Each structure stands twice: as C-alpha cells, then as structure tokens.
Image (cartoon, rainbow, N blue to C red; front, side, top):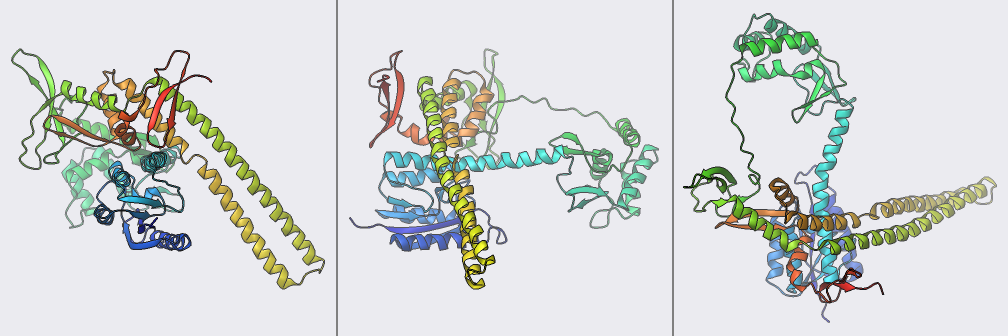
Length: 514
C-alpha cells in the first residue's frame, strides 16, 4: 500500500503577534519531529493566526481546496481543534474523509482511523472543541461574578477615580474627586443646568479632547453614575463595591431629584417580543430577519417574518410564524430519538466514565508509586553524599537527573487528571441535547425552541420561505446517518434498547437481558 503524503497545518487563535507567539513555532517543532519519527512525507506546511470558531480561514480554505482537487492525501495537525471549532469546517473535513479525498488524519495527541467509529469520535472531538469555545465565555462570566462578589470595579475607572493595578480595584483621584463633589453640589443647589454645568467643568479643565465643553449626554452620565456612592454596575444591575465612595448618599439623591424635576417624560416603544427575531439571516442578501404583525381580510392578527433589506434590494417574501415553527419542528424530528434510546446511551456513558476513572486511577497509582521511588532515591543519594561515599560531581549529576524525573512525573500526574473528563462531558451534553429535541417537537414554547437552535445549530437562514440550519457536530453526523438506524426487532417492554457501532453503520436495535 502506498503511503499518503501529508499537508501539515498549524494554527493559533490570536491574530496579534504579541499573543501566543510560541504557539505555532512549538506546534511546527513537535509536528516535524512526529513526522520524522513516523516516517511521514510532508507535501506543504500551512500556518495561520486566526480563530476557528467561525468559518472563513484563508489558509485552511486554501489547504482544503488543494485536498479536494487531489485523491488520497493526509493532514497532520497537533489536535482536531486546530482544524475546526465550528460545524462547517468540521463537516468539510469529515466529508473529505467520507469521499476518500483524505485517507489519513494524524495527530500526536489524538488517535484517528477512517472507520465509522473513528469518524464518530472525530465528530465528538470537533464537538468538544466547540464546547470549549462556548464554555470559554461562561468561564469569563464566572470570573466577572467573582469580581462582583468581591466588590471590584470591572473596567476602566470612571472619571474621578483611578485604577489601582495592585489591588485590581479603583480609588478616588485626589484632584478629580474634589471636582466631582463640587459639580454635584452646584447642580443640587439649582445653580446650573446640563449646559452651564459643562461650561463650569470646562473652566476646571474637564472638557473634550478638542477643548470644547462636554456634551449634555456626558454630563448627564456623570450625574447619574452610582459609582460615586460606592456601587459597581454590570448589565444594568448594581452591586456593592469595595472601593471608597466620593459622594454622600444624600447629595447623590438630591441631584437625582433635581434631574427628575428638569426631565421631560418620553414616549417609550412597546416591544412585541417576537420569539425568532435575531436568529435567522436572509440567505440572499445576508441581512437579518425581522418580524411584525399583520391582519388578514378576516380581521385575524398573525405574526410573520421577513428580511430587513438593510443591505439593499432583496426579493425574499415573508414567512408566517406558524409555517416557520412547523419547519423548525421538522428539523427537530430529524435529530430526535426515543427516550429509551437516549436513556440507555446516558447509562452507557456513565459506565464508560466509571471505566475511565478506574483506568486513570490505576495510571495515577503507578505515577504515585514512581514518585515515591524517586523520592526514596533522592533520600538515599543525599545520605551517600553526606557519608562521603560518592564525590560531589557524581552527586550533583545524579541529583539533577532525579529532579528532572520528579518534575516529569508531576506533569504526567496533572495531565492524567485533566484528561479524565476530556470526552465524557461533551458526549453526555450531546445526548441530553438530542433528548431535549424529542421534547421540543411537541412543545409550544417558541422561545425555548429558539434558544435550543441557538445552542445546537449554526448558520440559520431563510430562503424562499424555507428554513436552512446546520447542526453542530456530532449532531450533524447522527442526522446524516439517521437513515442507517436499524430496528431489529422492535424493543419489547421487557427488553432494553441497545446501540452499537459496527464497521459500516451506527445501529439501534432491541436486545434482551441475555
């Protein structure tokens, strides 16, 4: 059999040169060394600094175009998440494997074989990569919540305060804090309006970059800023701050009362709360889809969705909400599975997780034993040196070797613990998503249906009154092969559902306890 030739692909997420500067260099070093050890022939190397969360990477597209014009080539990358973190690019790689354009995928950190089992696990790896990207924003929000609990200011200090890099908080500016107090006192007395207060601040050196007084909106924001009484704000919600306030609560409330007396009531638009706005994009002009009410000739009101046409002329017609919901539920039916199947898959995943814990526990035990042996050797070495049985040069050389071994074992320990759940949670999350699709088929909660497609779908579009949605991996994998699911025989009440991966299909069938 002729060995395939490989395209080497290395990627880092940041496009800034000062971030992750060693990432690509480290990948290239490791991949070249891996290729040399495995005797892999490299056709060409592709590197780029761009996030894979969304499609559109130039070098990746160039490499895939080369692959799709050839037959029987391979890709060498550090990990599947270097290739794709979105369903479109991941699906492109999977399809190239299906059509034998790619006959080999090699990763130093991930095993892959071009079989149905291998394709499924590759989809899980791509799904895990997307799971990581989605989870990253949640981790950032968790950090923000922790800072809020500590009462820390989250962003650049407002006027009157300065950021303290040591405490990671803000503190009153010696001069500007006094100006804020004076401005509030003047406004509370009724001596100034917004325009005259801007001129007053300008005389004190507080003005725009071009030397003109602050705009009315800027002065209004200063007078409404609750940071001056020791509160921090996040998403229109206020939290107690741990920094020193500039103003007293009485002075701040006096200013708010004065602003209310000067303000004029404004008419506010009543929101219609359309469930599917902000979800779909027009496939023709790439504008967003909006919604509005309409009344038919019988006087019945209904909601429909249409292109905003903000990017120019567009010939797409409107789509009634009932028709839209019908199509979305059809999409849900494509990926929905019976509860007894998903329940069994969840139980099987729990079994795999237990087996993984036992396996990793054994590995951790071996590493700990090696650590104890290394510690014992270090103790014996020190005793030999102190007793004068070995010269200092031999002692230092052997000690450095044992210390390196100790560091290596500690790294292996951390890696084993981190890898324990690197695939179980994404797989369980996928099964729960499939289970929820079955529930939403009969649901009338349109907002919950919208949120579900935002989570599991990508690139939702409308064209000619038809819905188009791509499912995130590995849901797209299961959806594409749903026609291959076998029913043999139907599950009896006493039987349990069983799913298995065979060499040519993913099948579901009935299986008794024996």
